[in-house]
Amino acid sequence: MDADADCLDIMLRGEVADALEGLRDRALASGRMLITHAGFHPGLPAPLVRFAADQLAHPVVSARVLVAVDEEREHAASSRDSLHAAGVVDAPRVLDDGVWRTARARDTVRARFGRAPTKQ
Image (cartoon, rainbow, N blue to C red; front, side):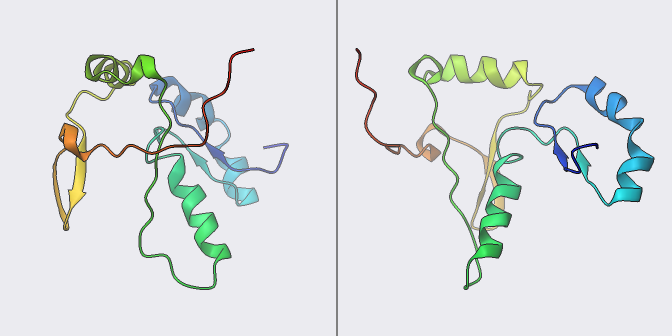
């Protein structure tokens, strides 16, 4: 609050909302937003895409958001473990032609984020 900034919490832990509850009146009075349980994806990218869209001259209808994942997390079992640790117990879902459905492995998109760092 002292930084005059909004807060977007990506963790899915209940105690965060409880901790921020004490700031409710100050946040409302100052016009600040305190968003809890947003999650990492799409929670974190959503406001970033919205901010970027506001900077463009043409309307943004959709945005593809990609996340770089280290090789250790590339395996399905490791990804499931990460989701469960974050409190996500339902199967991931994707919006496909206006209908939500359970995500499949082939829904994954691979992308290159530049050259791999070289070992020194």
